[in-house]
Length: 257
Length: 260
Image (cartoon, rainbow over all chains, first blue to last red; front, side, top):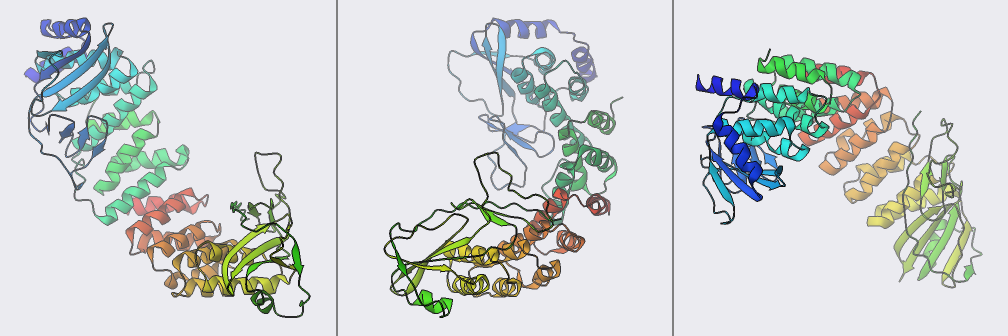
């Protein structure tokens, strides 16, 4: 019940007193400020750059790289709080860096705030909806790893919002695709066979065909493909097509009315 | 309707100077070249229709059924000159040490050069292929290319033999496969090589060469490779080229593969 209430508040744009405090303290910061809050129980990381188990077995580095569980190398992954370090210039957030796992030493000049996931999520939601392109895009990952209800309705709204910058919408679409794959139990690619790999390549190749050909095929595959690798790839490449119909399919797959 | 432009940049290594005259035109080309122990042997011959170049190393080929009479270039100063094919063979201590070719332009022979002048294109092509078989690297590549530009000769059987010859360096076999694909040889000549191109490098080239043939036989073979090749990376490569095709069968192929 707590999660549902929190999500309703976020979507309704309601900020608790704590959330307002987070926003005010961030806006008042000069340079960097760190927010620490609970992560999803599955999330882990090394506290430095690596974040594991974000949507299934997908892993990320805070520099934007990502890889799957079946890759050869993976740092130690420890469950722990999320730390978001915001760069603030003249009251505006220009950049976010996200960490999960054991706390690492920051510079003594970085102010640190302990907050609830809901309060930080409210602030991050505001950034996604109204922030600059970079800040809005950066705010999606810490929102997804926060210990709150999944933010897919919010990201769907942003993806459909013509007034938001294209890069922000595309970032939302990419996360929605990952979210849809996880929701369908397709996120784990660690057991992908060579044959699956070839089929996934076929989906990519199909996606590079003219949109009039590719998008209807990708939609059909995203909805009905029996092969997990094919369906996962179709969901991803459908989002990359830039076609508005992708959002409808994502909403359908995520069970969002 | 195959229209393929190919630009290959080469750098001349020929020396500049005054030519020696060779009066032994009645001898075979091989013996005339072999008579030069040290220095550079120059020759030129007629190109097949559709071959032109800028004389400095860029070469353009098209097929007879193309209406495009000029190479496309954003540089208005770029001229595509329809021949001759010019070949310089470097010799040292009686061995061939380098082969370079150009299309268009003319030689300015140096004092250590032996200029054979215009030679028979078919004889030159066959001779160059023998050099390619014995050589390696860039020289072999240029020998095969020059042979492929020659007029009035069908070297498809020789190119096929080079592709099949496991004693020839893979790079030369790939080059032979490429130029076989660019020739007027029927697609069946390429398909007949299927069993001989098993290494990953050759297989990848085989798939590419097929993709440049815009006919049903090549497309069908690409689909077969994409479905059944034992090397899944080669299957992916074939898949890529199928996706680039304008063949209407492509979309059906993908639909069947992904929903089957």
